[in-house]
Image (cartoon, rainbow, N blue to C red; front, top):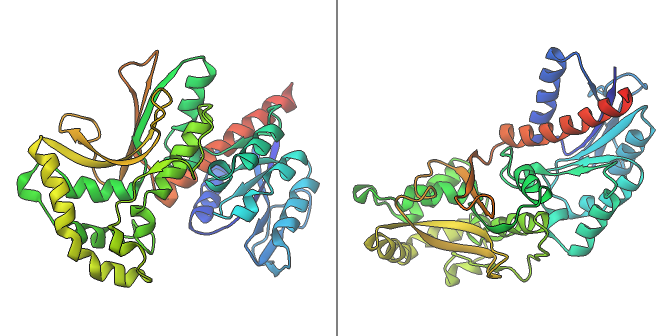
Length: 360
């Protein structure tokens, strides 16, 4: 039986759910064995005690360099290993090329290595160019939705990207799906909906980190780069919908207290769209033809698929030469369970490669 070793950095909410899904898989699968050989946080590490055992989580210990210990354990394990990075750390991301050079596969939901400086992105792609080892990051855009895999298929089969457009933030999706609707009797205050989203745990601790468009901007950058367009976050056109006077306020609490003072500002934008039979949606766009890639608050007809979105779902439309009527992917784009699913599906893709290689 083939074995794929797993070393997980960041066993937090998503990481724990990923481990739970592995455990469930192992109970029902008689195929490739998945073995967790190491876990690491920023301060602690636990490593499997033998070449055949998984980690014993009663054996956590403090470490001055837990990530290095984890990588050493993954490298020393019998068979092939994948490092799963469930952090949002730029410092961890910068180690990917070295891990790949050691023959370790990498799977991650961490957007930093794919949306930061192009030099790091190029180094990662170069280190995995041969296809073995590989780096997979489906969960960096749309959590568990098959967005990057669909885009890769489009590119690799020689199709031509005309435009990629989508609602890529579950937080902003929830806010505008509830705020800007075609139901005139359902008009609510913008600040009330932001507060509701915060109470439900949809927003970052400071909602400005969602409303400023940077998270969507990172996802647009990743989409563009996967499509072969050398986008950079620092040159991308990103519309920050936080009113100017609220951007420099020191605390999230003060921001939330003052946001109601700007309800009229958002109501005017919404009313202008409604007068044209449209709704407001915050979208990310990759537009290679016009060079207009970015993040913006846009108006859509009530008949448009983006206008009919519900809850906190994500939706993305790929317009290509072969798909002049866009190919649409839609569904839950946030949450620990679906994000862990996206990570796990990438791990299983690597596990299948390991199985094919060992049986060849």
